[in-house]
Amino acid sequence: MTEERPPARRGSARPAVQLDETAKRIIEQLQQDGRRSYAAIGKAVGLSEAAVRQRVQKLLDAGVMQIVGVTDPLMLGFSRQMMIGVKCEGDLETIADELSALDEIDYVVITAGSFDILVELVCEDDEGLLELLGRIRAVPGVVSTESFVYLKLRKQTYSWGTR
Image (tube, rainbow, N blue to C red; front, side):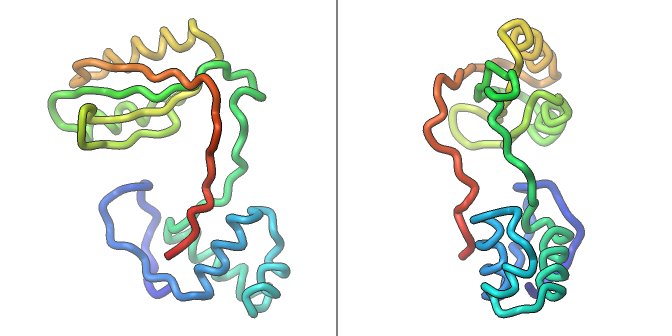
């Protein structure tokens, strides 16, 4: 890795970080198993445990990656998952920031095409979903929404690797 900078929001416009081959291999190791020890990663990439720990911390600090536990919402009692297409008028960045502030929404992206913004959310039940839809539609600048209820998840990965 050749550049350090403070973390920014995912997807924000900023130049790409240039990763060396070792950084890419460390990321790939963690994508295979986010709990893999620094010692095991070190053996795989030819570095000491301390060197891997330092490099991982730099990647985290630069906002290149996160290490998180990914849950299955259905197993946690969230029976409603969906994507909502949002049509807007006005400043999309402001509207996206307001939608991002809603706890139930876990993904917000400004798009080109039929919708200005897409949001992904999870709710415990239809009552919670109805209440949340009301809050989304009340955000100033939101003109209309279209809901896409998830019926069955067939694939979700976070292992697209590095270039």
